[in-house]
Image (cartoon, rainbow, N blue to C red; front, top):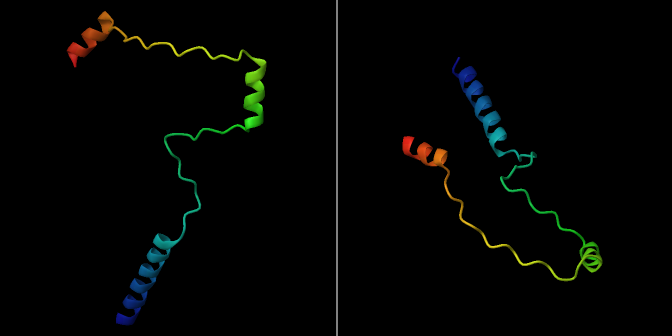
Length: 76
């Protein structure tokens, strides 16, 4: 009887260890998706066809809270 229990426990332990130690093949999803890099030939060609100078970035303007937004903030 003791051998049966010992064999059962060792079988369970072996299977658990195999499950833990086996390599996972699934891909881990990340929050950020990586940017796809374009080949340099396409980017330089597209710049030459369009205007050579880029427009400067617009200045960021702070957003004013609406009345509904302020009341929502007061409630919470």
